[in-house]
Image (cartoon, rainbow, N blue to C red; front, side, top):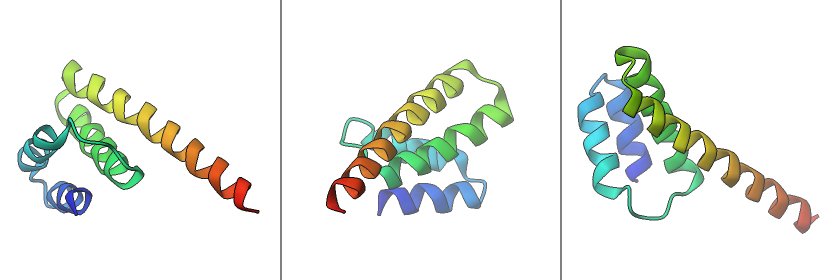
Length: 80
C-alpha cells in the first residue's frame, strides 16, 4: 500500500509528499514494489533538482532493487 501511495504522489507531481512518506517508513523492510516506487521517486527528484542527497537515495534504491530482483529470479529458478 505504501508503494502505491508513493507512486500516485509521484504521478501527480507531489514529490514532497511522496518523499515524506518514504522517510517515515525508510527504516522498515523494503520489498520489490516499495523499492521500485522509491527508485522512481528519487530518480524524478534528482532529475528535477540535481541534489546529491537525492542521487544518493536513488543509488541506494537502485542497489536494493537489483538485489531484490536477483533474489526473486533465484527463487523462481529454484521452483522449476
